[in-house]
Image (cartoon, rainbow over all chains, first blue to last red; front, side, top):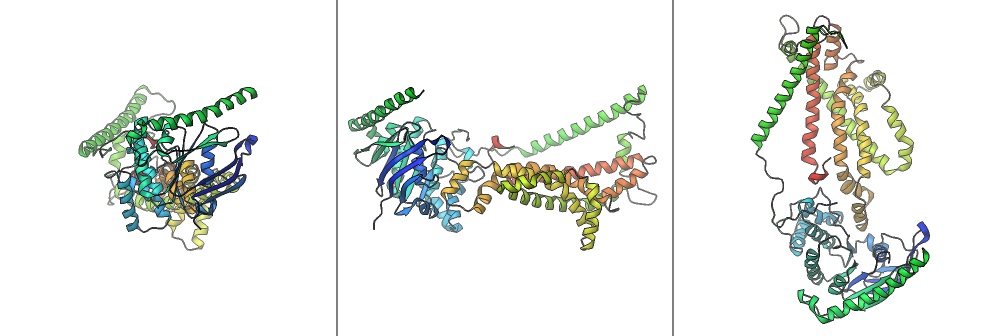
Length: 265
Length: 296
């Protein structure tokens, strides 16, 4: 049985505190090799959804499967790599040792680790920085280390929670391009949380638009821009059409949500 | 939070310092501070003796011997025909150092172990921490005789028994700071370990322990000097004559005849404490690798 990369069925998440419904009746299936972005205003549950897939948050109802396994089993089997909003590097480890961390946990021997770290450093273009400590790197470089670390053990699934949110626009666009190159090279499935419309359009094969209170899927947009994407992609008319489509989908929901909120207060 | 320092070229951030100049500066500073302390001591003596002030205490050669007497006392023999006092004091300092080192190591290991256990269990922490604190309110002189007797009954050498007494002082700051240090691990770093399905043991060694090192070393610095104090005091009730504690007790009795000898011994004891402290500082420099702005 060739399993979907991620299968989510009837997923509901209610937080105990205040009884807020973060996610309601989410159904979603991701195919292997897809690059799927989750986009929506804050409070729409996009990060929560990602964390449920990562088995960092327990769902209240419904099921989540990763590569045919339960989300919990997938975490235990280290089937996914995760990148957070901040790089979360360990200050006391060098770049090379930060990248090697998951390999150490997986019990790789020193030689295999060094070999793989070398490959990953090349992949994220950090050659020459192997022995630097995190605080000696710029924010963008730190994020590249985090990506290399997440991919070092070759997971089939890469989960990214607003990884470039804290970076300046120029660094962000450069890393977007690099991420696509890495995605093509690794062949993994990516779930990418963002609140940037253009970033979602540029990167994704599909964009899942979410709406808040309760967190639901408002719509799914296929991004039919040709692969591989390049700096010119952002200037294509189709790029603007798709961005507009997303914007309208988001705005419709946001306006409605704002009205509801005003009514409450 | 990470500093946003943009470096495009692989440049070494911490430049190789011009170390002979730095060393010279350091030595000069030390000499300056010592000279200032000397001036304060002698200035105080001179002023009080000159004016005849009696508060807070009468100053004469007995209460405050001149520093020159104290230092030169080190090079004079204890009694006719014996080696200079410093030889004797250095031997005794070496003996005390062994006790203190054992006490320091024992206290550091026990302190870390207790801290790690209490970190992992809120119940134990609530139950036991008050007694850990209470243990420090017991004067060391009150428990020393028991440790000496118990240690003797299991055949421990005397210096090890005193070391245990010293450890009683050193474990406490290490325990308190280990708990705080292990708690200080970045929650995001812990979450990352969760994505790797890491065991609690792995999390402890790979994340919490390195994160706690700045805290642990702050405690080890306190423990370093406390271990010397603990060893000296531990010698007193055990009537050990081979260490600095014995010397202090001895010179205490003859203070009115030979005040400079006690002061000289105090200087040697202080130097030992500083040496212990310096070793910990050196170890910290070698071990702790944190961002410069994070260094505690």
